[in-house]
Amino acid sequence: MKARMVERSSSCSSVNAKFMSWSLPTGHLRSQIVMCTHMYTTGTRAARAEFASLLRRAEHGESTIITDRGEPVAVLGPLGVTAPTIEQLISSGAVIPPRRTADWRPPTPVRIWAGTRLDQALRDLRG
Image (cartoon, rainbow, N blue to C red; front, side, top):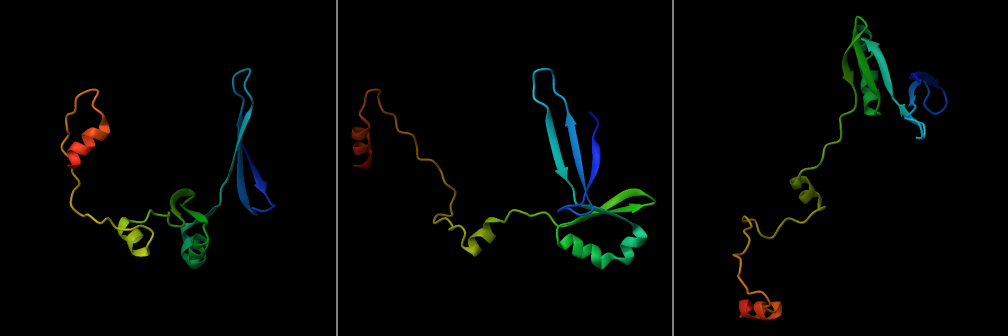
């Protein structure tokens, strides 16, 4: 089946909802993918004139495609959420900094014979 575009007027006013469906090989269920996009398109001249309103749209999570002579050249939208750094997490109190700051090195391995009881080996190591 071909993809089709449908104008939604309920909760997503003037938003294009793209419905794509395809049939799978015989014996499988038919599947349907639904994707609701919030894209507004404007030309460069209009974008210059209404730049403040485009910034407000971006602030509210909407993206705008800016075109030059009908060809899309840029997208103006909200910044992506970046993961906080360890320093930011420590300063906010979300994590506790480590007590040791030196590089961790594993202890030297200890050879024990097969059949040795572990509690005996640990007692010997700890003194």
